[in-house]
Image (tube, rainbow, N blue to C red; front, side):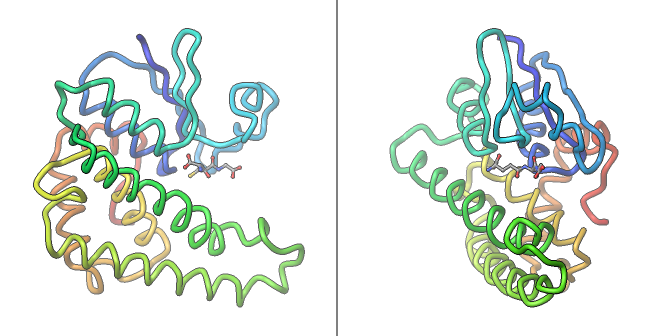
Length: 212
Ligand SMILES: N[C@@H](CCC(=O)N[C@@H](CS)C(=O)NCC(=O)O)C(=O)O
């Protein structure tokens, strides 16, 4: 199966992009422009009516949602050992995925970066953005507590969950939050990821940095 990943620099598609690099098998990166305006086109909406990236495609195969793509890549490439295969590990991965995509991304981050999704007028945005920042700070605090106890999201095993956590860490830096000062365990986790060649390749292909 030759995959194409539809992605944009620094978007949540960065996580499956890293995993595809980890797998080391040929794939195509269909990289949109920054801000991903291409998601608004009719052609893209035919591919994903939700109008969002990431999308993973192959012959007769279209998969949307970062979490589903990460899980799919982990499950279909058992030799890469990017997922624990027992019921407990899979449930733990879904526990992370559901929370990261459903609460942290779709609620907290969206309240900050896309307040227009929730409210009709710009004058109403500031308190919503403030509340979003509170939600995001509690999310980072929870991730910090987990990563203080373990090297990787699932414990000793580096898994498809870790690149997804990196997306949120990087977004904190993009928001000019003091990630290094406030979240040392998250920062150590990000540095461990940055040491990986797959992460370096994904960063350079997207033309982005983790730190700004
Ligand atoms: N629930 C989706 C959300 C994906 C999502 O919101 N992606 C953003 C980029 S990080 C996007 O495509 N935004 C385009 C838009 O909002 O128009 C997932 O987890 O994959």
